Length: 438
Image (cartoon, rainbow, N blue to C red):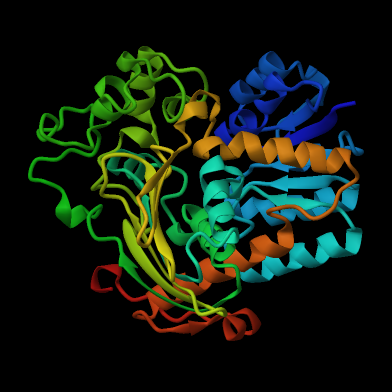
């Protein structure tokens, strides 16, 4: 019998990244109910997964008010709805598959952890990178001692200029007060991977970063409020919405790009006409220099772990492609990896370089280097077997959230070093300085 799922939030993550596993393995997963405030998304829920109309609800509150409808509640609502929805789901008797981040509020993270323990239900957080073959291979190399004693990790998240503009300047995650700080919303994946690879708890963090570029004072002379309203800078602007969504090589619909991010802009399968209408009237057609965004466009974090491993992490908007790269050094060798290329270069001192090419199975990879499908597969099988410890269960996932929230506190306080045990016991924040100064 397949594990049954209800979905709170039928956006691209809930309805496509995770639910699409049913299309490949209907014997393991079945979507039976869902909720979203957008009728178009509910229509796709019915069309793609065969959910009956009477099991489609206009809000997560309405869905969670029903008697228990499935084995699992998949929660992929906006960040600040995650914990309230998850608490109600646990009370109803659901296991929970929870989109990251858990919450931008540390107290809420800890409350959900406590509730999961009290109810005995399984709560797994969608830190999908642990399930990607790329990172699993790196972890296996470390566990086999190929690098000797691990000493340092340097990781970079290349957000891509157009992805930053889409999600974190014009889009849903542009404002900290409405969602989460950038280091949590975009990079709690990375904090989780660093904790996993380091192999011990993080003791201290220090962070610097700012919103430097996407500000009104940086708008070129003649820039309009919207890209399709006769902007005088349109021809030269790399952030022109028409270039990104319609004509561009990375995402342009004229180049066959009909999935993310275009389906987010239109709220469903896009056409050029629908995209143009959305860009004329909606948030994604605004000038990137004239939005109401406040999250950073670059940030660095320094970390030290209990076993002596030191790590650095850089998140930057200013790259051509979305990718993650990593370098690890140990007493017997070093390793460099590129998630986009799915290649790892292992150099054991005094021996020839070994190139590990994981791209042979790339056609089978879904989002996040195969991590989206890998997570859903392992979760279904975990629930089918009666539960147990998960690779990204609530207990381990809380650690990365403490790291990210402490890093943001450090950034807001001029790079002050933050002790994580102290921070977890007494979270602090001070008056936010002007981000341009940090």
